[in-house]
Image 1 (cartoon, rainbow, N blue to C red):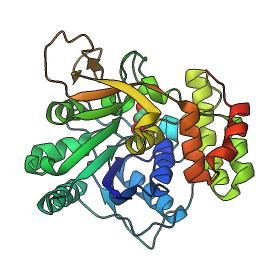
Image 2: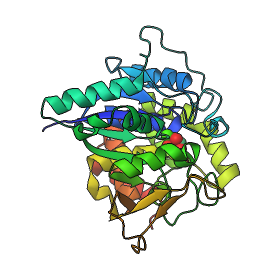
Image 3: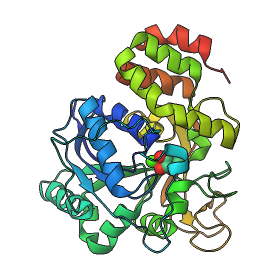
Length: 328
Ligand code: RIB
Ligand code: CA
């Protein structure tokens, strides 16, 4: 199988961590690097967390780069109320000392994209946080975009309500100016709250994980406890919505989700700041710049995640997941 070259831009973050685990256990991906952006936690803290994940998955060979520490225009607002002070549910795992993050993620992105382009190859970006690094890349190195095959971004919302305002999802709310620039310059596969809210890690699923793979299960259990408490208080959900892993899964297997091509613009001002305005009825007659996901198969996603991260074959996980997942 031809591996697809990718750079993962993220803000780990609990669900970013699960997404990185999935990506690192997916043979279809050749992960050239991980770039960190200010989001759930400040950039330096996110980089420490990315290194922890690489250590757990025995992939400290993959470089981690420090990206932008503030949004393009708006003051930086973190999400530590959701992800904990350490960004991993206050699990307080030790920092990795044997490898350190490198500087200047945007330069790394530009150099890598240009090198791949010059080799007549291509590379994709899986963006799991605010789009500040990607917007900076566009502003400073527009020539390198020819080397980008696809960008998949976890962010936005179509018909689902926001999680930072009635209409805005965190990644695009945290840096709406960056999101606006990215949607104005690239064709974005938007993995929004309409589909990610279907992906809920419940106590029963967590219990199953720990029963069949205690090493991975116990780590996931430890970093998601805080997230469970937040979800009950904030969204009345027992368990936690794990947004980012779906973006990785969709990048690998498009059958997991469905959607439509359309024109999307990100609002940067006022009460609806951060909203992804999706012109599903073509009022603006603009060129389509996005593929917006509207449905997903949560059961198939969970089997996909279990097969790769928990190491349980689909035929084995099917009967148990059927028993413990709410079937729509
Ligand atoms: O709104 C959810 C998104 O914001 C996820 O990517 C989460 O990790 C945060 O970055
Ligand atoms: Ca994220």
